[in-house]
Length: 260
Ligand SMILES: [Zn+2]
Image (cartoon, rainbow, N blue to C red):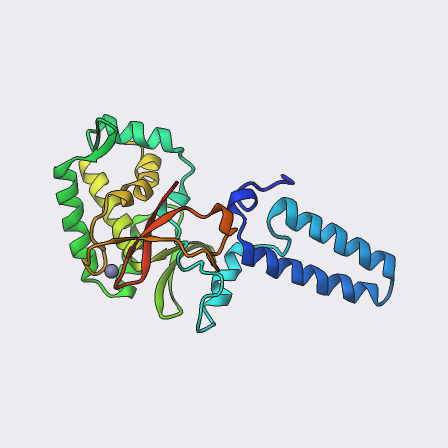
């Protein structure tokens, strides 16, 4: 077991998850302290230490928390905005993705900007148009069919917003909002056609950065807007939040963030 979990600590620490875990550690420590004060103190110290180094101590917090909040009318964790990506399914690094896309002519470099091939953009737009017409359930089925390592796709509703839970053997691991699901499945299908020789892992990992080229919402076609990230209840430590996010004002969903 790796003691430190960088994916859940440092800048990736989810503040509400940490708070929930510290509260649970406190409850456990108090329960033990009623029998033995020193042992209760030790439980509290070890538990808090584990939350600090590992991000959380209650197993699978990042997995159960979204399911837990799906039962609430509001989303206090704001995991709803922190949508996952099909790219989470493959651990390919960003440089390999950019190199692969550039080799296939899908992205180019002009001065200090990265550009998207217009033919790819048009095909991607058509794929998204077809997916947009599907119901949530039909879209979930399409997601389940096209992805390796995903055996089931559940449709959840979190604070009135659709969330697709992609899982294997009953364990949801990746959550997608409807706009992101349309964008990424559309991108994956387009890559399959436009770049059939590209490594499948790179194709899947490319779906997240490709979202950065979107100008309209994949789900409702509204023009996307840039807005400041709210400082409060952003889900993670406010000091580490990106400076701006690009959202669909009608769906109220984030499509991507602009890092400082
Ligand atoms: Zn929208």
